[in-house]
Length: 307
Image (tube, rainbow, N blue to C red; front, side, top):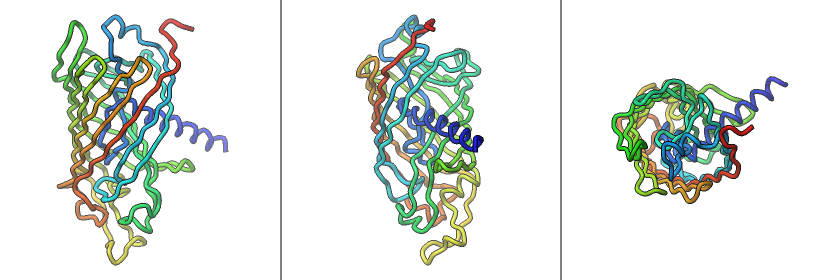
């Protein structure tokens, strides 16, 4: 019993950390993760190099996100979701945050490359809420975590501070599904992408990402496989295959209302033509578009050097 409680506690912490990445304002398009969230969690609107080094050691806050997202990649139905989430940032020897690269768990770093952790997640699709999956099991909450390698291809600087940057990134993430009573390993995904960000004004940051997603057989089966027990007149048996899942383009804005409040608006475009599972009866639409609006409010900080 104690072991199960510990597992649930760890799970909640992982999901909370993944979902707190909504503050990132960078929406990864992993497996149509229209609520997929990772990276760039805290970039300050008005900083110079000296101020960046003095960012608080610890921050606590809260946020909320509203998303109109599709039920799964290449679905033809979408639903509205709202999610409140905790927000916490610790800046130590591994966990860091700055204006150019946001918040990350950084293990290797120099001026041109970093090796860190990437997080993500997606909303569930309750049983029978999607007509194409009627009678099939629900799609649970998904959480993702794994290593990411970043290379800076180009940057524009003002003084010693980067105001615009273009990066190549490649992420591998382990995916787990949960209904909070159990946790199931749901496979892995690989996502190479280009990431661009620039400040349009002191308080407004534009971000965009273009990438492709590859899924292994377990993850592809989670979305597209039709087992014998789920076969109907309109839904034939289908064996999912690993491979290309889709292409994603994310574009959005972060508005730094104040030092403690920021607002994020993001539009996600996902394209699934050429997908390895385009022949699945659950593959219903070759393009998905989703919108996300989120806010993050920091209400407590601990400065560097404080006890």
